[in-house]
Image (cartoon, rainbow, N blue to C red; front, side, top):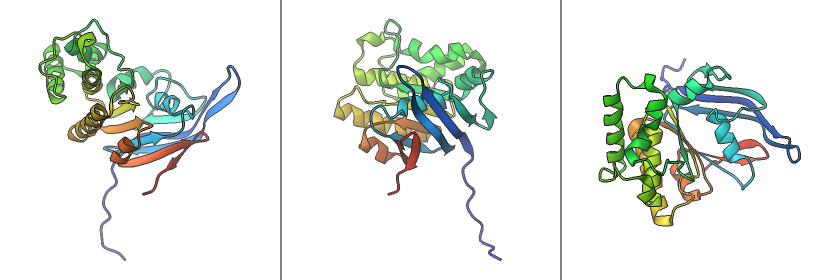
Length: 235
């Protein structure tokens, strides 16, 4: 009998089973094909693949923004259904998009506070939400831009606001779709490191869709999406 104790595995935060997605128009195309994925707390995962392979669609399904045609998705042990996905999305998930999706006539601080205003139950008071938003903007180096309208910010600054916004409600999982796709190389490297450092510092799980092999190499796990299924990259 082996008395040596095995290290405990990190708990599962997201589990997808037999996901399938078919688009009917303009022609029937199966994008996701019986796809399985298990994600553990604290993982950083990169999903790569050719353009049009379905990476963004997969991320939207994992983020409950889009429904699969078949299969199941569990987040933090709770099976996603049409009745609970809005609540789980607001409580458990944070999103970062390539095009930032900020409100240009709102300040950086107001943009970061939007998730807290949508899901007020997650934050005990307006004062706590305000303090957390300020702290997050400080963490991403924008302490002198809190009250700037986001239309006045550079691309890299806008993406830092988007990262702070994604963390505002203290989500378990951050989903990022090409988070540096609109940025120059130097700014991209800064955003990559910032995103992974903040994820590690805050203890968040990170799922990134990217074409950037440099960013993918920084993640703990890497997958290629090929013919609707994920193939793990082994180094």
